[in-house]
Length: 125
Image 1 (cartoon, rainbow, N blue to C red):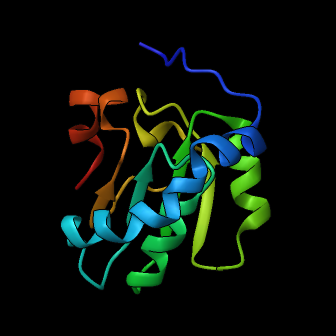
Image 2 (tube, one colour):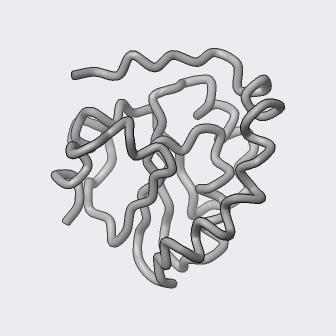
């Protein structure tokens, strides 16, 4: 089933909810214990705060995916790290549907895992 989540205002999100993301990213990543090496997927990356925090901790590339084109646009505009990329992607679909992307990652992260449920297990090798 395709996602029905729709957003249009990344700046509004940043003012209301996104302002908490940088403060919560470090404790979340301490808990997640992703390790230093490998490629990481951030599912439901939103405006990219957690994706940037992941990239600061790992040596590999980080891909942030979100269903919201405005959020991905905001994340791309604020990105200064060549190891980070962002793609518009509906998490209810396999990553193999994305052009120019391989679905192989060492780790995955999602602070909005309720949106993908059991689907996510099939994406990772």
